[in-house]
Length: 139
Image (cartoon, rainbow, N blue to C red; front, side, top):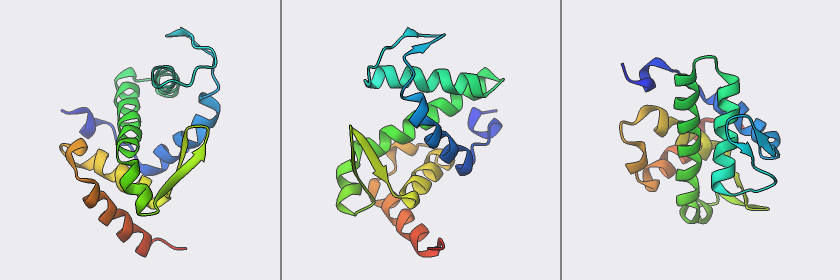
């Protein structure tokens, strides 16, 4: 059975983990990767995410699966930031951080938890889903 079928990853869980990243990004030391200092590199932040998810889940297969999804969602958004910014679904928040509209987060999360090859889903399709979500979500 694939990890995607074994480990449900609801949007609300994902959203809570995004909120936790404010604290996690400040970690200067991890038990698995050692000292990270104040570095905010992709490598240091990935180490922090893996550490955080490993602490959150007893089942380490689940922790790795969800950390991978979490990082993949963020990578997809960053790779297509220009497109999403032009459509006013995200903007630079300062300090290298991005402010992403909830509908876009929900759309990308849906793609990464439901599609067979999520990284190959065109940003245009994600934009369509995000726009549809904006229309049906309460203001």
